[in-house]
Amino acid sequence: MGALLVGAIVVSLDTARATGVDPEGLRKRAWLGAGLMLAQGAIAVHRLDAVTALCVALAVRDAVLRRPLGCGIWAGLATATKFVPVLMFPALFAADVRFWRDARTLARFASGFVVTLAAGLAPMFAFSTHALSDVFAYHAARGLNCESTFGFLLGVWRLATGARVFV
Image 1 (cartoon, one colour):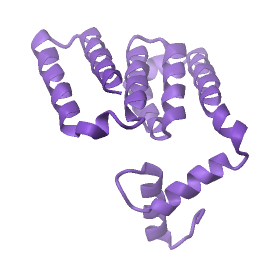
Image 2: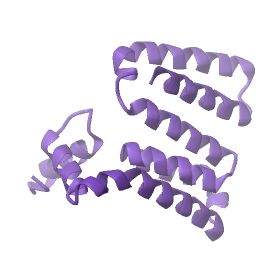
Image 3: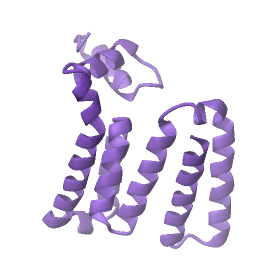
Image 4: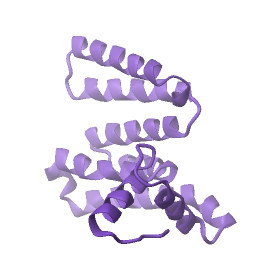
C-alpha cells in the first residue's frame, strides 16, 4: 500500500508539472506529500485508501490532460473502492467547464466510469443481493465520525430533520 501512495504522489507531481508549476513548487509538494505519508503512519499502508488515492490521482491527471475516457475509468475504479471520490466530480468539471460541456466528452467520461464502476462492484453483488443496502446500513450505523463520509452526511441529516434513514 505504501508503494501505491508513493505512486499517487508521483502522479500528482507529474500532473502539477503538466499544469506549469515551477520546479521549486514541485519540490515543496514532494516534501509535503512525503511528510503527510509519514504522518499517517500505519494507517497509510494498512487500508484500501492507498488504492483510492492512486486512482483519484490518475483521474485528476487525465482530467488535466483532457482525456475523458481515462478520467472516467480511473474515477470509476476510485469510486468502486470508496464512494467518496464522487465528491470530486463537481470540482473536476468546474475546473475546465468549456471542455466538460461537450456531450461527447461527457459521454466518454460516463462510459469509462460506468463500465469500471460496474466491474469493480460486480464481485460484491455476485456474492450478496443485499450488498448495497448492507453498505448503507453499515455507514448509517456509524453515525457522526471522520471515517465515514456517508455516515457523517446521514448523521447531519438526522440531526437536521429528526428522520431515521436506513437504521
